[in-house]
Image 1 (cartoon, rainbow, N blue to C red):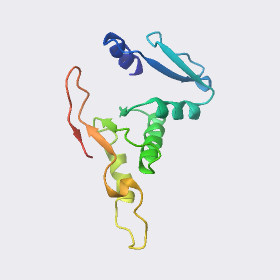
Image 2 (tube, rainbow, N blue to C red):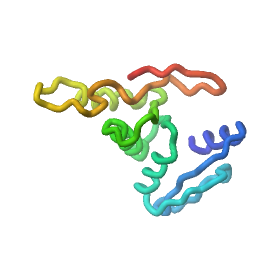
Image 3 (tube, rainbow, N blue to C red):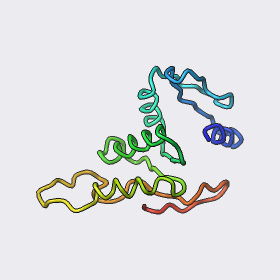
Length: 140
């Protein structure tokens, strides 16, 4: 997936970055213009968050789940602002639904609703990625 995104960006004339970690013992793919090498996977994750203007989350495993959770929580606690996050397809919808049951569900009147997700959705959904066009985000 990341190689495809990087190739598409290169073909569009955009400079590409690869944030890698010594922990994984792999270097950036050949289409990356600039490799940013971090020591640990968590340092890599926070560097990705720092560098990104927004996040598109595709179907994935536990690593992708961790990345989604960290970015979502940072948005929820207003640690990072103005960085949209969208999940592509319906793969993550059951997880979004379960978390929102807790975050947006009934609370005692004395409980603080200061967290952003408690007052509205932070993660958007897109049915698919559209090449060379637009896709509509849903507030789910």
